[in-house]
Length: 52
Length: 242
Image (cartoon, rainbow over all chains, first blue to last red; front, side):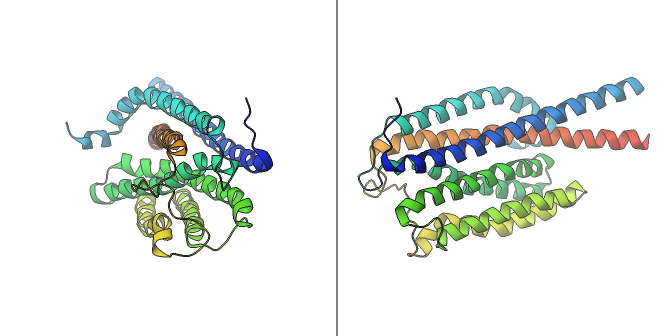
């Protein structure tokens, strides 16, 4: 299944590795911060709803 | 219906909640499909060998590095002219995505350049203008973080975005302005003679679509987060005043 990358295997795989790692980090950070802010906002709205 | 309706945060949140699953699904299909096609099912180039497979990540990320800044420019102009908060927040949301795309373009370019040019880096017009674009992204993000008042931050970052647009344009057209340096001419061209061969072009097109859709997905997610964060700060301030 793996294509024969010949003498450039390290070059190609490291380029893909760096790209996928950076994209994964960007997606994970975006989702993590989104979930954290959403939870905090919901908690704040509940607290202010209770306190009028 | 006017496009300016989406400048209303409530309307933006409703519409983006409906659109996000579709855009995300399309982004995953295009990215996974394009990268698998390009990596596993395309031949080596007669000159560059298997390193040609880097084109499927290098070209789309470089395009998005520039296009993200163009999107930020449009959003900043809307903020400056019409004072719509959602547009300022969308520009803020896009910056880390554009910065990551620039970083990917720089890294993959260096990794690709080493075996092809014999060096990781050269002060070539396109490479240098991309490095400057990366620094502009860093400065833009730092400026947002450095200023407490959100409207002042939006004003100043919009001005920085206008100035940085010169370098975004230079990054795009550097190979046309200066016919020198190591970087070859643009890989994509309307001229069939100059464009990459069809066997590389079709999977590349799918990868470009995938990167564009990933950018849209992340901008929607991050803009929603910025809108919620702004509301959270407003509620906290109201609670403190009460």
